[in-house]
Length: 121
Image (spheres, one colour):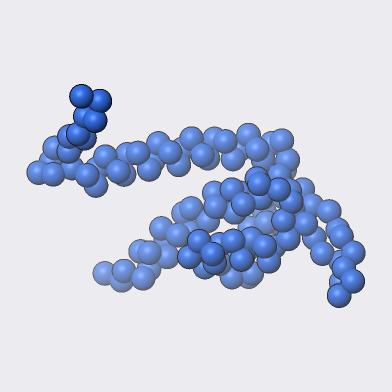
């Protein structure tokens, strides 16, 4: 089995959620998204990012505005719509449920959930 392929598929599964998490914080230029992803050790190519941004915009989750640039062509800055924020909030709930379930499974020993020490004693 190819571990790199499995790792790649896992990353692709959370890519949209991560990109929306970045945009949710405020208006961003696509290279800002690439930089934020790299800083978090999640690599994304612009050839992957732009089609995803277009798909999210066409779904009504994102909007954009053009900003003139003094050092080249105008830049497209993306922000989240109200519909996008609702979608993001649902993804966030789903992510938390999934993360909790995976954590519960990966902390099992001999088929039993591990007891968490009670620190309130």
